[in-house]
Image: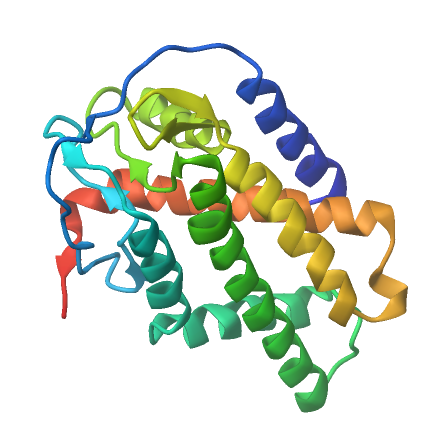
Length: 227
């Protein structure tokens, strides 16, 4: 992903969030608390935040469950795999913090990506959704044309739902990605701390999140239960 495209994608999501919409999620505050689903998407990624059935109402996500979701994603076995994949990508493409090449720099990139992922989960799944009364889950469209479902996945980056079900801008993602990106500057080499590079990393987070939404949208029917 080029720097220009990453920045364009981030700005596009901000623009989408400014467009008013009045849809209602299938959230029923009167339903009793329901445990987080223990399932995976594509056998690897935790599916705690994915609402599989777009028709059946679900209970409001409690504050403790938002923090539980961030905790489970951070300490899930796939977390190490994700960190290694991102570190490998950074190493091969020389993207991200400029640590150099070799085993030592790969370990530094692994630590960077692990810290980056964990802070992103904390801000976007737990802290900001709690403060803003926002539901951090992904509500699948589940049907319709391929293009409409891809659009829904992209739209979900900009538009989320309140705890009571009404639509709202996806502040948790937009602000959370910014907060975790700014925090990552604290443990990045000085040569990597510039405004364009920071915006590029922000845009990449939006792009990765959009890609995960695609997997949740189209991989939802194949989600596997796990303990």
